[in-house]
Image (tube, rainbow, N blue to C red):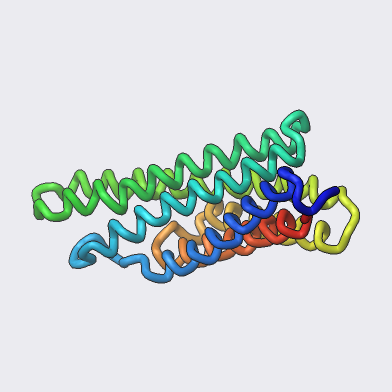
Amino acid sequence: MNAFSPENRGDRVAGICLIGAAAVTVFAMAHHPSSHHGAGGINAWVHGGMIVLLTAIFFGFSHFAVRRGLDRPLILSGLVAYAISAGAHIAAALINGFIAPAYAEVGESVHDILLLCWEANQALAALGVYATGTAFILWSVDFGWRPGKLNRIIGVVGVIVGVVPAVALLTGQFEMDVKTAFAVYTAHAVWVALVGVHLVRRI
């Protein structure tokens, strides 16, 4: 295939987008404030940035799924799962980055509202982890069926980072506080970057 064909140029754009977004996601989570109070503008910047990054990753994965074939059940179901993940994580970021901080400025009179925001954030973040894990597992099974060392590595890593955080969350081993979210999203970012490398190497 011609290295300068439109298909390969699209692979390169999507791959670089995944690699870059994965790296910046880790950087953004490392600067995530631990509370709404006294965080200043950094809270909005971090969560707003995460929304942009989630959108970029969804773009990259959409291109990946199209190239793999949306007529294939594993690929299409993985994309549906990741769409649910992206929506849940974006909603969680909106709550923690914009809605809860706005109410936190009011004072103690909105304690119940802030508690509701926290529970909603936790529920959405958990849904995002489960849906991301489902997408990664489905796509990793597809990688595992293909020849090549890189495909096998991507498949194994995808199953690990898809299963372990989801099972730990489901069994109550942790909740999605800042430190845990950093660990989970960093693990997810590793697989996002690996898929990006796969797309770039198609050139």
